[in-house]
Amino acid sequence: MTDPNPDIQLEPNKPSGDPLEAQVPAAAPICPTLAMESATTFGPRTWSRWEVLGCFVLTAIMIQVCLGPKLRLSQWEADASSNAGIAEGVAWLDGRFDITPANADELDLRDSEQRQHDTAYFDGKVYNVFPPLVSMLTVIFAPLHNYLIDKTDFWLQQPYVYTFFWPLVVTTFVVFYRQLRHPVYAAVLTLGFIGGTAVLPNLYFCRSGYLGQMDHVISQVGLLILAADLLGKQRIWPALLGLMIATYSRQLTSLYGLVLLFMAAQRYGFKGFVLTGFALAMIAAPLLFLNYQKFGNPLDFGYANIYVGRETEFMGARVAEHGVFSPAFIGDNLYYLHAAPPVIAEVSLTKLRFTDGNNLGTSLWITTPLAAWLLLGAGVWWKRPGARALILGTLPILAGLALYHSPGYLQHGYNRFALDFLPIWLAVAAPAMFGGKRHWRTWFSVACIAWSLLYFQSITPDARVAQPDARVASISGAEHGQV
Image 1 (spheres, rainbow, N blue to C red):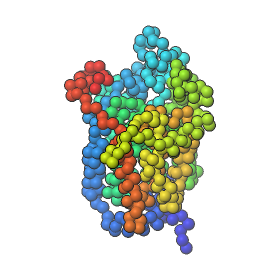
Image 2: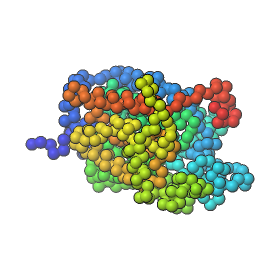
Image 3: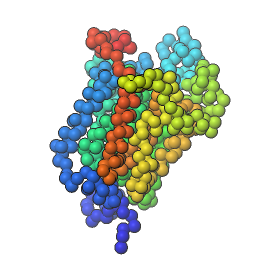
Image 4: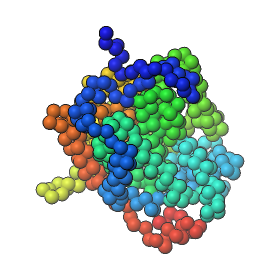
């Protein structure tokens, strides 16, 4: 008699510290059909920990060699004068929720030019509308920064890089390795994800402390943790941790909570559903509390208020006419996500260069064709309940993005909003990307990654090399923003 659910392998009950795990089957990382193919694709050998660690180290070296000029990790810094999240964290330390400048009496704050970009003007005060993770980290870093530089409104390079960049690299490699059980392929996918998707230009802007781009980068860590748990042991609590990171950096990703509720109910029954629902409520509570304190309504995230004084601009006019979310935006958003072509500035036998002329986005399928494995590999991942749930869970995200008033402004030649679902797609489809007759899957995947690396290298400029004396001056408390 065949097992009606080939994705779950029953194991003898073992003592466990988690009472929810004591009487439930453990989910296998890949389905048996894929496992048999993997035996011929990846070879019968097993990889030692040292070999896996060596592949990770080589991955980190490749990222530095290939992407280093774009990233300039030694020059990463952020400060409250240009980052509303840090400014909000400093305001919390001062006992306030608003980030109204001290010289507000001398300014017309309704004029968007006289307040930080994309901050909300409401009831005579200025507020941050971005999710609170950067603000929370500012409070956490405050004792360290107070001790080192006697100020809390500036992020030093070391805590910044070790909080945003290296967790992304480590998490990406670990998640892909757990799906593939092959460290070399995991290394290739890690390089392709960081250097061949919208992650790269967002990392480029992280160097200067751009809040929106910082949120995109750190949200990838959360989404990958969520995917790893639901594609693996399905313990739920790691997925909740990943969801919290993602939600506190990209609020729309909170919709993945629906997937967690479903999987908790499937795996742990009614008790799991209730406990997961309670955990989701705890994740949502700080966001609703902040909304109430800032805008008087727990369900008002304040995005419409960032266009006060900008009603005649393109985005401001769209919000004034249709609101923050509307079916009127579906056509534009679908076009820029799925069909918009890149604008080519120069092409010859020896050179291919793209312009930044299209600042509303470029088709995901053109910039990152590796995403096509979501369709090509459907026969593999559809057999896995966790994978099915994750992919179906991206549909509310896609719907939210389609209804949003902005397709993703200031994204020259790429689509950064695709990062709200792309890591889920790639983690789910990864086992189908390698192998096949004559290794056609491998060659196709490598070709897709090579194209994307070339593309994003072309559209992402090299970071300007800062003068050493300026960096030293900034750390010692001089005027920031000169580096």
